[in-house]
Image 1 (cartoon, rainbow, N blue to C red):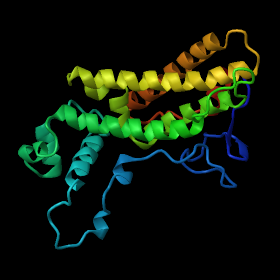
Image 2 (image 1 turned 90 degrees about the horizontal axis):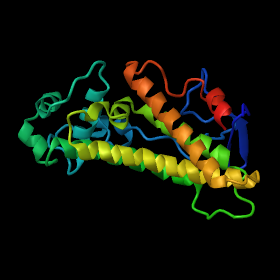
Image 3 (image 1 turned 45 degrees about the vertical axis):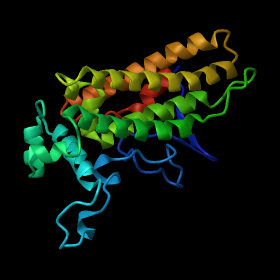
Image 4 (image 1 turned 45 degrees about the horizontal axis):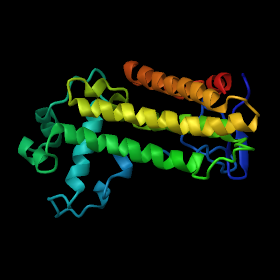
Length: 256
């Protein structure tokens, strides 16, 4: 309890500081906090930069309009006090007809599913790089397990900080009155986060010789998941003013 959390990446190791620093920038010396930066829907999914588009081309390329719709939806979710978003409002935002939206998505629920797919792919691709695929040694465990768990939590919170509109989807605020399968899918997302943390923490428990590694891992993963979800909820409900990575090093030091 109360130990300093150090984030290790390859051969690099440095104390993990978040206060007053850009959480998406590698620390001095080039040692990244996570395997790669969390993705942003507003930039990473753009098929083509607007400035690079030929002036004469007016019709979007195949797939480009779909991305524009998702980006517009995410941007609307970032607006303070945003109410339930309708397809009519989304169409006005894009200056197209509602019929044009339905040429790319069968329903608004499918649009939200597009956002959820982006969240899942962005977070779990990097989380898997952090935790790895190697099976645990039942005798030695994984001495780096606690560090891996810390990095997974950091990844999740940094992703939310970089994609504020997505946070309202992640915590369920944007899914109220939408199809129940959307909330069920986000519930599964956090269950999978907890499972990933449990995997890392079980290795740490084995490494320190715990007699109940599975129980220790379950408790620790539950606490970390609840902490991360609480930070994301606070971020959304503060109008994106209280950053989820605030005092993160000290907070994780109390839990790991």
